[in-house]
Length: 348
Image (cartoon, rainbow, N blue to C red; front, side, top):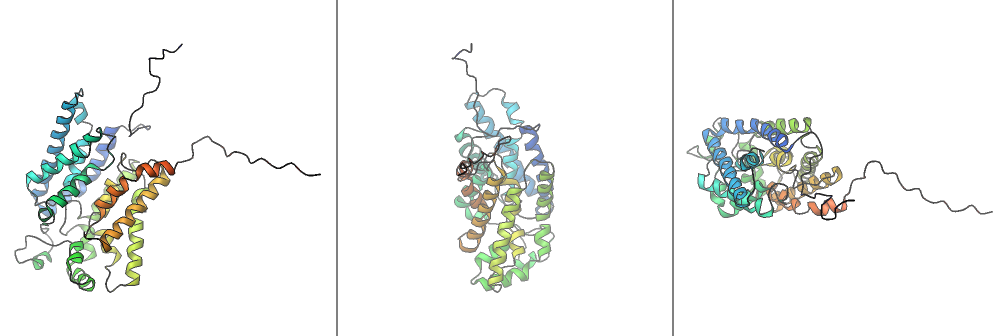
């Protein structure tokens, strides 16, 4: 007879790994997928990109260790080695320009690890993506420093943007700052080529540059089955569809859809942040709804909002709806058959 005081079920928060892949394996796969984009940022922005990544990763590891010590968790070093804090640090760095000072990076690491993660219970319990919460906080607290974009080193057109050749506006920033939409479109087409956006030779955050390198990393994760295709495809597809419709209606005041797909943090958000296991839906249909919602919100913020970029806000808003999506979009369990409909008795 079972002892009633002995629990027969152990309940814990997500993520629940049911495959052969461990948390460590998933985290380090994502880190490997981010390496090409991080290397590209170093090529375009120099060693400042590594400096930002160093402070972000170091800060996240330090605040993670502090929280684990305060909570009395055993084997702190082993927990730090699972890669989750390192990944949060790299993602935070990819959301920052290379010009930010070290103390601002540490402030972001503090918000990411303590406010957005450990306040809710640590890994698997946070409702919002920690790196995005930190980015939004820094953008609101220090908007001038967060929108100071160093010019990439190998883009000749950047020398024409500013006399000192040090800073350069981003494509989305040009659209938002123009006096009229038509003027913004003309300035955008005059200063940027689709090729530069695709390769990453533009101003922006470390992870808002090379769509090509982010795409390579994202396809690697899908091929290795670390992430599923539903969220990235639904997110990018929805943004592409809506921007194409807007461009078809008023092409003279709307940027080419390719600019909206390749500029900003769309690829970084779609492949590496919206697909976070903890803060995204569990079922494939729910993932499609989540991705479509991210795409709609990004479109609305970019076209009608006060910020030129909407990826961070869109993903965090959809993070808040994940519990609702999981509640009402429930996948069919394997092995169940549809209940037969009873037939009315024949008359006669």
